[in-house]
Image (cartoon, rainbow, N blue to C red; front, side, top):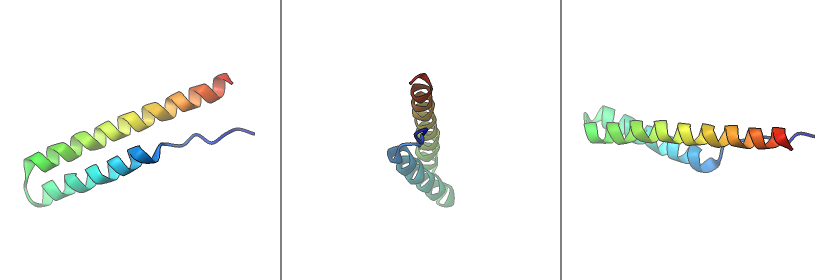
Length: 62
């Protein structure tokens, strides 16, 4: 049976918090929070998906 490949919960939590910061910055017209939130979202998604690809490739080679 194949093992499930899932994204780490750390990246999901980081993406959620970054989304909150992004919308907080948008609602209060604060560019610094908007920028930090946007960078956090992109970083969390990039790292999470990279980890997902690495785990999938490891399962294929086994």
